[in-house]
Length: 493
Image (cartoon, rainbow, N blue to C red):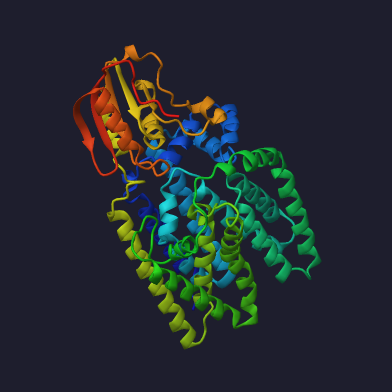
């Protein structure tokens, strides 16, 4: 299967335009949720404060620093999301160049097209977090690793070192991708002294450049990750993650069995096609560990403490689409070509269906009415008012949307995160109750404290005068009360 250079360039532009359109589509419907609010609030601080706040995070400060400088030029919620959108489209282009280098223009175009349609990649391309940037850096790392092993020491290895180091700084699970690269070099390049020498030098350079972050990583490992709220790892989590590559999307409540089977079938088909010929095995040795090893390693680590979250493995998506693209691009006989084409068509159909559902289905987590609720409260807020939140999951988004224009706080404080709270505030309600005449109560179902929102409302009904409901939905309640008595909110241990 061949495509001339001019035609492949035109098709690449179309693929990139489609990828950009899918990531801009319904972008405005995404509403800032808790993690995004934390990033946006921290990014408003000074660089020194951002670095210090990382002591209460599970990531380094790099993404929030990048967001800080990005927002200093491009302010606003949509602009913040555009950082992820643009890096996602750049990842699609990078996958094209990787696929072209591994299997020709057809492989590159197919791989780029499949990534452009990936629901998992689209989801995190619209989020104000580091995962889209991380996926770009990992993809560039693999691209320049491949170029370096074929060209010898030079700029490719230097760019590889920079991209790999930045990826690990952005998200520590990037180290699994580096281990996958080690597998590739050991299997396919161990007999090439020049490549081995360049590889050892590059790994030492990455280790030295990451060394300044080791004290922070140790601090986070011993003091932060131990507070994980995630339930013990279950097999369905891993199977559910695999289903996200073909026909399912995050938040999908339907059975994902068919999507899981389709992903496995596509994976097995691609591996069988590539491994049939010796000249394709190098490609397989690069891409199979890229996709599979991070999933395996994170699953093993999560047996002790569950850290298995889809967002930490978004960067495996290019590995799978490249497997499919290169397999079909390398087919020669009719049977292989038809089988590969059918699998690609099945993936495209399934992911198109998943994207349609993602865009059209209400999601209480990322498409909530928090932004509308915050703006409605702001429109009626006046001197002597206070906003009381039952959960930090509304407090931080409200804090982002309303800023310093209002007085607000949360009834039950979360963990004591002194470094983070020094930068974005601790959410404590004011002590002088007599300063307030009206209370805006904001209730939200908190999965960490189930039923607590109803307990707070019952207490408020018993101790204050209820005036009216401003907003009531399955996920958000905003009500107005007139203060009565000396206590503002219930006392919670």
